[in-house]
Structure formats: structure tokens, C-alpha cells
Length: 211
Image 1 (cartoon, helix red, strand yellow):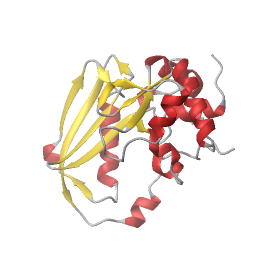
Image 2: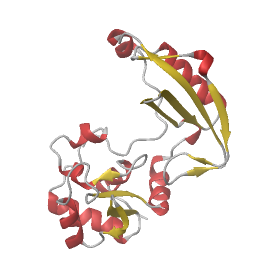
Image 3: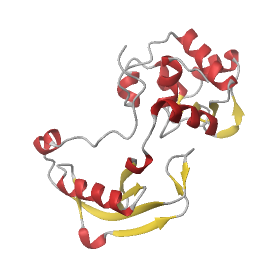
Image 4: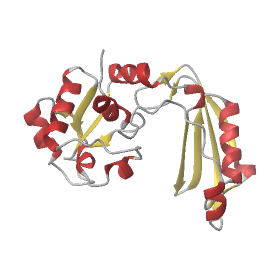
């Protein structure tokens, strides 16, 4: 299957999370979606691309509050792009299908052994790290200990478990993974340490480079 750079941008944008359609029309779409660049498409061209990806069953566009309500045609997608506020259940989102995930993998060549999913909750004050192995999760935990962010891990609270299978993302399932949880308390933000810390190594080849 042949995909152009616009197709690949739209696939990469939803590798980890489904994305509300209206975010694709924002003036700072690259910043909003943490992408290297924006897609550079007009609203009309964007609709054409979304319709083409949907027709090839690489993405699925549906209402956030009811996955049975889908948009496939250009006319449906035009309405979907303009429908719903930020947190409204009427807004439409798009996501990869398993076929779309496979197509993205073909081009991006991800190394799932290096993929990390980490998030902090405030109520309760817990961090959850998921990775392909205990070693990878522990390495990420050590990064958190060294980090200058506002969340200081409490080592005595650390608890791990093996996941079989592991839902690495909403579309990618691997035979096994590892989940590590820990409680945290607030600490002083150290901006210098954050800025001087090396970023984690990329786990896939980004297809959304600057034009």
C-alpha cells in the first residue's frame, strides 16, 4: 500500500491516542498534537485525505460519545470537522484501525521494546508506567527519580506487575508487558535540570518531518 507524506502525518498523529477532529483545524496543530510540523492542508484537502484514509480502512472517524455514529464520506467529514465543542460528546474523533496501525508500522519501523507509556494522576497522587519489560519500566522510573519535574517518587510505594497480554496502545497488543506504579509527593520544579536532561531515545522513525 502506497501512502504519501500527508497520509503518514495523519496516521502518526493518532498512534498513541485518538484525536478530536477539530484539533486538526487549529492554528497551532503541531504544538497541540506534539508533532514536528503541522499538516499544511486546507480544510478541503484535509477532508479529502480523511475520506481517503477512511475508505481504505486505515482510520475510523466516530462521535466521541457514541462510537456507532461514524463519518466516512467527504460530506460527513466536513460536518464532523465543524461539530462539537472541545469536551462535547457530540464532537468527532479519529483513530487508527488495526490495518492503519500495520500500515504505519511498515513505514515507521517502531521498536516496541523501547515504547514507554507514563502518566501522573493527582487524585490519588499516583504515577503509572507501562513498558515492554520490567527492565524498561525500572529504567523509566529511574529517569523520574532524576527528573526535575514536580513529582518526587516515593520508593517504598513502588509496585510492579506483569501484563499478559499488554495493550501498548488502543490498537497495538503485545504478548506481555510490565506495569509499575508508585506514589509521589510534590517537590520544587527544577527547570534547569529538566532542560539539561537528555530526551529519551525515539522508539520509531517519525514520518512527519519538516517539509
